[in-house]
Length: 390
Image 1 (cartoon, helix red, strand yellow):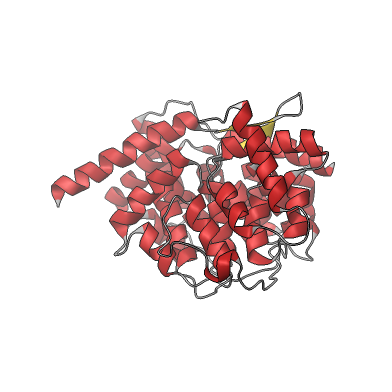
Image 2 (tube, rainbow, N blue to C red):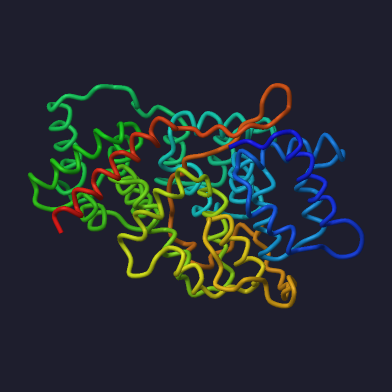
């Protein structure tokens, strides 16, 4: 639900007030940022810039720091800009590419996602993503990312049973049938075929060769390419289950910085997507999504409180410790070499970005909305079927 003009004006004045003068009213800042959807934040960002001559991000960047500042800054820019900035950090701010960030942004996306990201990146940084990938990535990972950037997944093609059989045999011949598996052939199929077709291929493969294709990947490949292939397979089988798994790893990570959880919170806070993830999470794990979040240890209580609000979960405490203030330990989330949490693992696709209109205003473009609706039905049907079987 969008805000009306009065609500937008009231919100930007309140935001301005939280950061005016000495100090910052962090409790009010948390309440405002934590209660707004990405669409509502788009309205707020646009009006804030028009009213005060600088962006909300610029103002927040000066006022709050550490992991708390990272969350505040992350929700004060369009999601597509957040993704493009991660690509920039992954390639331009490091000697070697950060595959974690690149994989999160590029692997498993729809054609529409990729095209929008490429356009936004070129407009902001005056260079193409292909250019930076070609300079900073090598070998199989370079080929994988450049194939993803082609945005040539056959999303509307109708496949026959013969197509399924052919791809099963092609994958077998490229992996188990030979000593040195062909990353190129596997990349081509996983990056170009429609997800529903891939699901049929994986089921048929398991029926014929008596092992899941994920096991084939684990046996035949190593390093980053193996992790990325597994992401593509899991995303094709059930992308929301994969995302729920990543949330579980991020929430229960041994680190207290939770940089991965911050990124996932910023990306997946859209209500329709978040509820699907939670539904699967609550079914697959002993504790609920909300319980796990509340039990997680954070370096900064403000960060925890804001993440709980953004993910629509209630805090066990009624108010922040220390009257809304907490320790501020400055960990640099902008460091693209950060390998905390489970950061050396490669995570996959996301469903929502924001794009800039020609008039300069921002709107949330919930890309693959049709796919979200379709997958929502598939996931719920699967959950109901499994519940009956139990």
